[in-house]
Amino acid sequence: MSIGRAIMADKAEESRLWMDLETCKSAVIQNIFCQSSGALLDMRTVIVVEVTKGKSYSSLTLHPNAWKVMVEDGRADGLMKQAESVGATVRILDGAVLTKEGNALKRRKAAERKQERTPKE
Image (cartoon, rainbow, N blue to C red; front, side):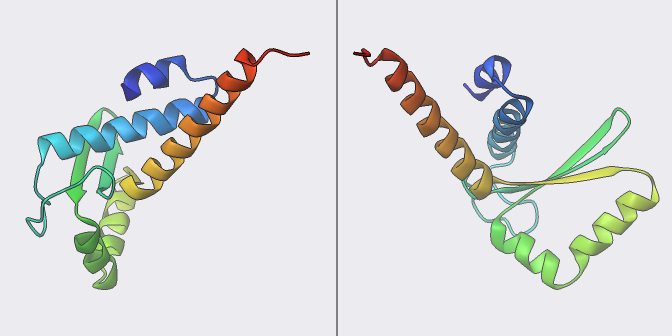
């Protein structure tokens, strides 16, 4: 469903939001368990670390607690520095933030549609 919303989005940032949500959903479907801790994943909280260089793509699908541990022990910084040293781009998708933004956007669009249908006097 996010793909359809991405295609029909009015603005580029809305399209990116729906695509990022779809990326999180796909990551959870493909990796039911965290690649670091083995914890069960939830699309609403998952952390997806995407590393892209040219046409090459890799991702790490993590439970938020596992990501917190990686940040605290410095492995996240090491990953960023290593990717930067080879000219790769790193994006971190936070399922909690994306879900919150997606829900807010859905509510706003629903209110706009309701206002359009309301007869004006």
